[in-house]
Image (cartoon, rainbow, N blue to C red):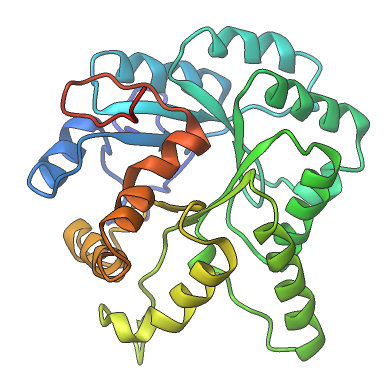
Length: 285
């Protein structure tokens, strides 16, 4: 969520991006999704500016379609705990994101005891951590992270968009790390960034993606996969309804129970989001 028309502008997307450089706000999101069955969304940070955490929470206040927010804070900074406590007072603040974004490196940061203690603080508060822009190095870093802090819930974003190494040894190492994460119930995988270009054209043929989706299903199972639209970052790949239809078709084949887990039940386990509208589902008491 961002608004380039603000006086202070935005750190992303750049002005040169003719597709993305326009307001991405709840009203526009509702207009795209109201007829598609979407009744709630978790916002994931798109800015490293501290006060943009507050800006998102302020916008969310009057927009009950937003059921949670994953913010941007750096666990190794001296004032991290004070900042975390400030935003955590708002029940919509559900965690932080850290990874291959804003010049950061999760694997390298794990060598810093202060950083690890900061993430333990997040885990102890019952909040989660999203990763950012996966590659094999980041997947290994999540293995290391969950070794160090087994109580921390982690959501791995955009895994279908990861480029699997061509080198055999590197591919085997990545696959071993992925399967290790598959054994860890506190690790969730967001099925987002699915559409890819085939011969220069974005394909929406499910058959093209089925082997990858089958593999992630086999590794993580019905209880650990989450829907992620990646909107509006998804706009260069296709319309919201096209991208939704692609994954909806795949999970419909798995049955109603699997679809409900993928589209909302598993997100409750991962994010513990807040029901804000009567049309939003909830688990039985």
